[in-house]
Amino acid sequence: MQQYDAIVIGARCAGSPAAMLLARRGYKVLVVDHASFPSDTLSTHIIQPLGVAALKRWGLLDRVVATGCPAIRQYVYDFGPVTIAGSPGTEESPVAYAPRRTVLDKILVDAAAEAGAEVREEFSVDELLFDGERVIGIRGRSKGGERVTERARVVIGADGRHSLVARAVSPEEYNARPPLQGGYYTYFSNLPVDGRFEIYIRPRCGFGVAPTNDGLTMVVAGWAIADYEEKKKDYAANYRKTLEAVPAFAERLRAAKQEERFRGGFTPNFFRKPYGAGWTLIGDAGYEKDPITAQGITDAFLAAERCAEALGEVFTGKRSFDEAMAGYQRDRDERAMPVYELTCQIAALQPPPPEMQQFLRSIEGNQPAMDQFARMNAGTTSNAGALTR
Ligand SMILES: Cc1cc2nc3c(=O)[nH]c(=O)nc-3n(C[C@H](O)[C@H](O)[C@H](O)COP(=O)(O)OP(=O)(O)OC[C@H]3O[C@@H](n4cnc5c(N)ncnc54)[C@H](O)[C@@H]3O)c2cc1C
Image (cartoon, rainbow, N blue to C red):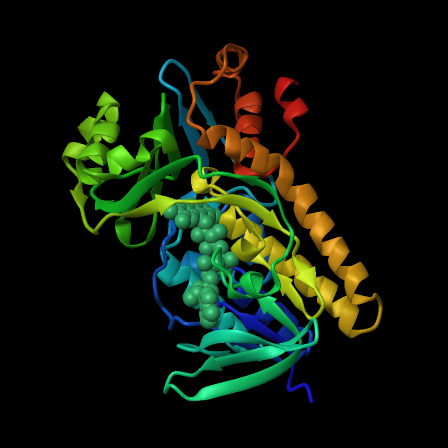
């Protein structure tokens, strides 16, 4: 007997929106997570304009804004000799935000519960339940250590890059690339950025600066993967050196105070086939990429939304599971692939090739072209051709 229409494993950027959207359609949903909320996770947290638009569609943007997290209106790419400053959004969705994950994920989990999804925090899924090849449920442990079995028509793996669901069903992996860069981030007070996401790109390294909650500024620095292990040996000093290599930023940093410990690492790059008998994958579990272009949260939102729509078609008998899920995979990949390629290129942290340097010089100061550049890097548009118009 099925107890739930859907069980969602993981309750952050992918899982909670999927649970919320399915529950809003009237389906019986269980969402579980190891974590309790609010809690942090290893991630910086720029939400691109398309992700902000999703929050608005879901009626959750006001909650994010109410936390005092500043809007980001401009992306500034400092390549050394050339600086490109553009607006990343569109008329309908003009800005980005970078709310702390403690703040964002709690808003998402609460919204899932308000929509009627049953949320179980501090619940660890140990294994999937199979009937032959078909996934029919989960086995796990609740907060008190009690062993629990639950069944559903579909199990949604929103369980991040080390996805237990993916390990259990071994989906096809494609377009995989090795890790390309690695780095560290922390937070500073007294380092105003005034509504900008600043990105400094230098040979074999770079750093990004964005405003977040509580008057703090997040600063993330990264190095090409070939240098990463060496830099990691004294990451705090190397982080500081990377930032101070830009004199104007070093000057600003002098007045700032580091408020939190460093966190960091590197990220693999891959797509996974996101469905099979009785299961689907959303968010990082199905598509993981280097964070350098800050796409993960936005991708997780959009995959959750598209997957929930496809499951609605399945549950109402409008489409077969395979047909609906193939549509979800196609849409996910078509949207993600251009920005994935761009992300892998940027994450290599190589100096831009001469034609790119020439292009950047040619658009410096041309506001429509610089806006288009920012939109492309934000994943708002993948229309590279429009850059030259
Ligand atoms: C250093 C770094 C910086 C980043 N910066 C950005 C950025 O600026 N902007 C951006 O958009 N993205 C960024 N990302 C990517 C972003 O963090 C991810 O894409 C996003 O968190 C994916 O959301 P998710 O819900 O798929 O997975 P996750 O956020 O990883 O959530 C998965 C959840 O599943 C739970 N879980 C896993 N297994 C189980 C289990 N067996 N039982 C119960 N629960 C389980 C975990 O506890 C976790 O809460 C960054 C990533 C890193 C590593």
